[in-house]
Image 1 (cartoon, rainbow, N blue to C red):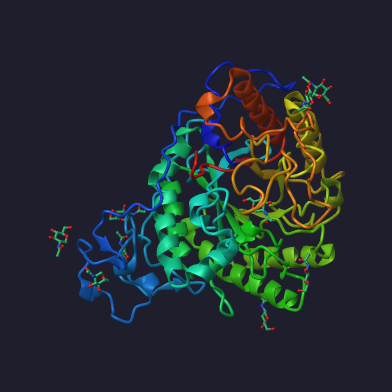
Image 2: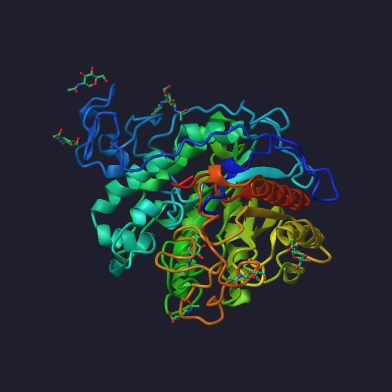
Length: 500
Ligand SMILES: *[C@@H]1O[C@H](CO)[C@@H](O)[C@H](O)[C@H]1NC(C)=O
Ligand SMILES: *[C@@H]1O[C@H](CO)[C@@H](O)[C@H](O)[C@H]1NC(C)=O
Ligand SMILES: *[C@@H]1O[C@H](CO)[C@@H](O)[C@H](O)[C@H]1NC(C)=O
Ligand SMILES: *[C@@H]1O[C@H](CO)[C@@H](O)[C@H](O)[C@H]1NC(C)=O
Ligand SMILES: *[C@@H]1O[C@H](CO)[C@@H](O)[C@H](O)[C@H]1NC(C)=O
Ligand SMILES: *[C@@H]1O[C@H](CO)[C@@H](O)[C@H](O)[C@H]1NC(C)=O
Ligand SMILES: *[C@@H]1O[C@H](CO)[C@@H](O)[C@H](O)[C@H]1NC(C)=O
Ligand SMILES: *[C@@H]1O[C@H](CO)[C@@H](O)[C@H](O)[C@H]1NC(C)=O
Ligand SMILES: CC(=O)N[C@H]1CO[C@H](CO)[C@@H](O)[C@@H]1O
């Protein structure tokens, strides 16, 4: 996380055998182009939208068309079909999509084209990356969006849009249009990857009860992103990252605070709303055009099952699974989060769901007893610990069975700006005080565990990193890929951050 973007993993050099098995060489040739926020679009728009779209007469759009059907109000019209249509599937607009599609592209010569079967993920694990911080924003990924006086308490998408009010639309659309572009997917393909996980949140589909979230604008960017993946032969893992009420109370669910999904007064209502969201999404993504490209359909990112009643989450997951299949999402792997409850606890749970996979997110920086590992201990744990966990989970006798790692990183510290939260310190230097003693870190948690713990190295420009440090990063990544390829594969977190 933070500075540990995929593109900094330059594995083109000598392969070091960190695990006892042969490692897979991933040739990274990507050079990151950092999208700059705040620049003006040059496609003829003014502050409120496009006033001149070539080929589209203004009169072709009814004056009362809602903004999501009116390209004259879109900041970016590249590659969208601008012909007006009110057609929907699952009550979600198809506006912007072309009628035909072409699934003949393949990401590289080692994987099948989209219109050929991928085969068994246990034999050909996914190698992917997340376009995180794009349609579900996160302060550490785009700190410039959260650059306000701390007294305003702007810490997540909810508080940001609440503060911005009607300006939320232009700020977020500017971000959607620039943070991820067609070139992003081309670079992902060129980096040797074959899958992309796209996090998005429920307000792409629906908003409720005075939600401040920007309604639906992210929907068309999601659809265009999928089309761009198609162009480069990349398969897509759809990741519903924020659910009504918040499934984990973390900032990246949209709203930091109490969990309101399956908990609290509106817990059941929010569970029902989440099913309604999946009812619509799965009708939409059951269309033939998505059959080959949506390889993974995610139900809920990181439900906090260490707090939520486990049986309620399992029952919700089963209902969502059956709904999605009933609506015709037939081929995609249906993905659900491990809920941080320990992989062994999944043995015997939900095992009758076919083509479903457990999603585990592996990091060492969010735990005060693991972040202190020195470099060799981190690599060792990534090799041994995570191989053992993956094998245990993949075996239906000792775990759930199919298991993938849809998030992991090379992060060694939690030093990046806003990584823990806007305004909070970090574990590394022992400055993380959040009012909960069970997770606070008030003494330094770098390997020396004393006042020499510093963020200076981790936060320095990559160009200043030493050769041994870069070698550690490479070995740490290779160890993880080796472990995760004993399962159904992996998705690096995250492709890009603003300061990369
Ligand atoms: C800006 O675009 C809007 C929407 O198309 C249009 O109504 C308005 O006249 C334009 N304003 C300027 C100054 O071009
Ligand atoms: C609209 O755009 C077209 C080409 O994209 C250009 O030729 C034309 O001059 C523009 N009209 C106005 C009023 O800006
Ligand atoms: C849709 O079709 C138009 C016209 O052929 C094309 O310019 C555009 O690139 C297409 N969009 C996508 C996402 O393929
Ligand atoms: C653009 O959308 C319209 C309306 O849905 C459709 O009739 C047309 O075929 C689409 N154009 C292309 C190039 O796919
Ligand atoms: C569960 O909901 C209650 C009532 O809204 C709330 O006070 C509590 O903080 C929630 N629990 C968590 C862990 O968010
Ligand atoms: C949500 O609740 C409503 C009202 O009780 C019910 O009609 C609907 O079937 C529920 N939706 C789902 C997907 O369970
Ligand atoms: C790293 O940590 C391991 C386990 O605590 C220890 O055995 C090893 O000596 C340490 N290595 C260095 C270089 O400090
Ligand atoms: C921190 O601990 C390390 C290893 O024990 C030691 O070498 C170093 O001098 C200590 N630094 C300070 C400032 O105490
Ligand atoms: C308090 C909180 O929710 N913090 C999380 C905010 O999101 C980052 C990732 O973007 C996490 O690392 C924090 O734990």
